[in-house]
View (cartoon, rainbow, N blue to C red):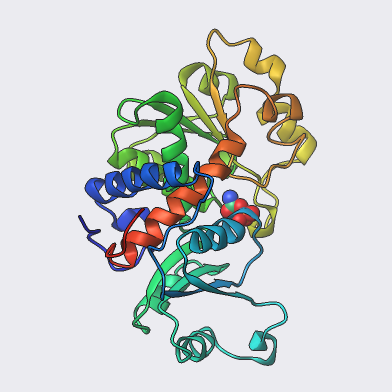
Length: 311
Ligand code: CP
């Protein structure tokens, strides 16, 4: 089977079948990653550039590892230390890299729509590794993979996305994906961090009370306050945010069920999540990171045409 898209720019463009195919392929690659020899020849002779115009720990390392596990040749580009500081444009930078016979581009950029712009101008397949406040499709996929792995299904699952919804590309990719797969979604947080249009536009529940959100959901996907994307004051202080919307073990223990805690990282400990909750048995945060490699292997493999062997 093949994906219906040439690029992975966002979950918005994927069909339910595409999502199912990526998650099922990731399950097979996760099995490969449990073996003593974790490497397969699937992308031998494929060259991939990881183009990071914005900081990253998990996504950049995870893509690089996924590429190495698939036997691809990889090049890592970070904007700092490059000729971007001399005024070179995104398109010139990418065309120069592609002239060295590069086949695929993984790109993170602070500008929403940057990978979509690139897709109109270059022949190589592009994977969006996070663009501004728009989408972070592989994070959405690895979140869904982790939910399915933990709870056995996506259909009918109650997922609360909690925190700075307004500036979160992770929230957008989660919403697109979970809606397509039949989950129920609630967004929760302070009114100033939840877009007014979201309830009608995306058919999601909105809740401003954290405890009520936690009482409703099976899974809480907790988000970081994206201070770097806020150009005005949207809440009084981090301390007050934490008092109203911070999750700790005492709060989790006061619920009448065990909610699964997720976070895309990086965590601001003591703000949206206290250590006793982040490091508890209810949290699957490091499993999310582990699953990111298998999910990215699946995305890379399928976008390359899926012609090589998976074994
Ligand atoms: N989840 C995520 O995108 O983390 P990084 O910013 O470290 O890549």
